[in-house]
Length: 275
Image 1 (cartoon, one colour):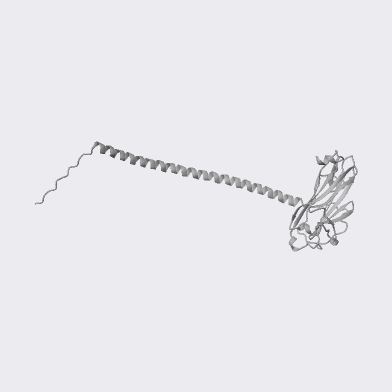
Image 2 (image 1 turned 30 degrees about the vertical axis):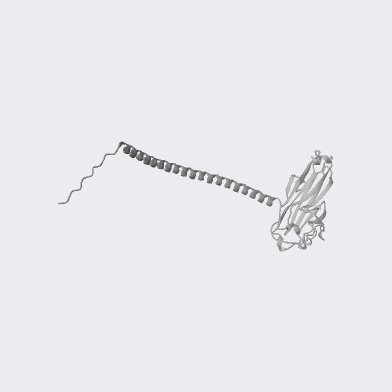
């Protein structure tokens, strides 16, 4: 007959063991709570990061939009300037109570301090001999023809004192070196002269058919032109691409040129001009 195993009596835990066991549960519970708090905090941090990213993205969008708006405005201004300013005639400095005005008509019904000489698009080269006769005749204002610009205007001493004035014509914008082959014919009271930039190989040498510009950008600079009170000077500006110029090559095809004429009254006291 088999022997029965003697039941092992389980001893009751001591108070110290109970305390340790309770401490262990508290530690584990604290760990679980800490983990829960950390996860909650981490979730808050993620939400904050997403919100900050959205704010930054919004700020970047606003900045980018502003920059694009500024560029668009600059582009529009550039287009308007290009369209409006291929030939600009304007009044500059006035001194000693003297005044001059511009007009497209000899009657000065439309007197102004600035005129738009316009532009000609899609031009090809021609030569001076092809220009029509009488471009400084009866027509005033803009009277362009095929492949050339022509603009006639008037300058009047509108004050009650005799005066002198300076004239400057400047090339204000060029693309594709179109200025290398341009010719500018300027009539003043029926007398004309034709101007060119100068030889490409030697800037000090004038082209055979024209007077050389004053410098790289200034076509003319005339000083102390007299104009009595109430008197009028008549100007006509003609521009074209000269086909006989050595620099009239395919490389300048599609090029553009802009220019400006400015008239300044000469002060009686030269020191006034330096102020």
